[in-house]
Length: 535
Figure 1 (tube, one colour):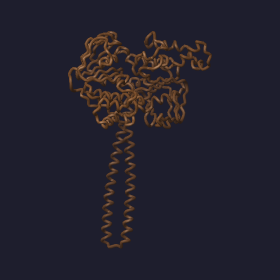
Figure 2 (figure 1 turned 135 degrees about the horizontal axis):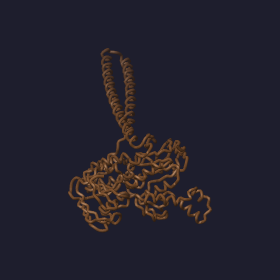
Figure 3 (figure 1 turned 120 degrees about the vertical axis):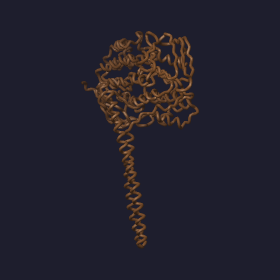
Figure 4 (figure 1 turned 60 degrees about the vertical axis):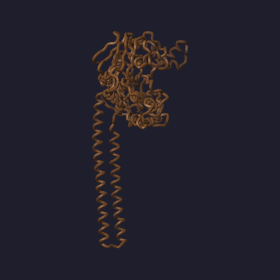
């Protein structure tokens, strides 16, 4: 076992608007395969950049032993060159300058001992079955989503780093390349921190670490151990909440009963004093003593009630409730029986075999296949966003597409604006309530979408699709689980299971596809389009 470590020593970090993200955060990551999980927006990607030295904390220190390579989640379409996407653009540029005659010490420092970097990249690309003519100087925007992630991963494997920090490394990868990634992770000998919501990937980890508003929490064991432990914690937290609520109700009853007894004693004392015909000055003193005693008793009861209420609030805060995504009452169960037809459809990209498609109410179709085979293109052609090379598409009912690029959520508009535009006659207060149930608070839904996390943008885009007017009867979903946190993924699964309309969904997440409970599977490959009865 190596002695490499990544340590946070009382780290605090504030966002650009001054809001604190981390405060006095201390934690040590050991050089074992570690999965990092947490809700969207909690700061996982920021933490990764702090650990890699790309950001500096406002307070505290980050200690690193060994070289750290950070793989950020590549945007789509990716920017820059293929070499820059691989995370070695600076090194390749320095190598080119040295080969052209540079003697700048900074170039040699940048290269270090990685003189065979180009060769190592080419070996990785060949092993990943990427195009043979792929060149580091090419624009990365030419790559598909899956190819972009493969190129980014190739830079990690070729980096020679002691530590890899990978942010959502399985996003956009098809089933074959996901298995390839899992095998590569198993062979990795250095330190590894994988930020992911991919449960199959998390099952490969030695331990899970969760980031929440209270800090970092270590769970020994892979995904299932974490899931079982968290379920037990939630059950215990719910039981504790029930217990302190019962105690609080008992405290309230006790306070009422004591108040009633005090009122009765005070009334009896006043009556007896009048009947005893005591002097007014004595009556006044007795009244003052009684009131003082009653005041002390009330203060004691008030303190006890406040303490009891604080215990209820603390116990309630420990009970994490998954966001309720299944709250948009579409009309997918009504309307046309036949929703969409395609005759002899040939796509402009990917598989060139003609496709016959007849989608009816209640159908739930999973679309599977390798990266670049045309799955996303198929959905865009069906939605009318791309023209087909040949063939016809007939749309008989309202449909909606949620794609990987979230094209229905522009970067400059807010989530509230997007959802309001999709349903102009809806009550804004109701929209705010529904978005709050998605885990999107009043501040987030009014910010530009570009300032939000990927997961928050996915939730907003999903809301604008599902709450549209007219309500869709057919949903076309392209990797809808990408960038959602685990709680939101589980809620999304519940939503898809309860969705009354028809579905066509492209996904490489087997858990999500199984939750879809597909009535049919449309597989695309070398043999063209083929129908299967099950996954």
